[in-house]
Length: 84
Image (tube, rainbow, N blue to C red):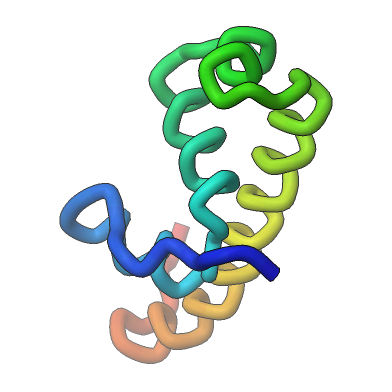
């Protein structure tokens, strides 16, 4: 696998990004998409096809979802169940 991103975007968010073990390309694509760039624009900037950009974003989101899901049991233990 490629190089992993070991630094986060900022307070709080960085911990999830670090723990998700995103590659630099996955992180770049996800970050640029979050800034409002289209897959076509991201691909042009990074020199890859829009479908490759979409794949990187999909894999990054999958990794982030897995990381967040893994954190949920710890959150409920620390804060207790919430009544709706």
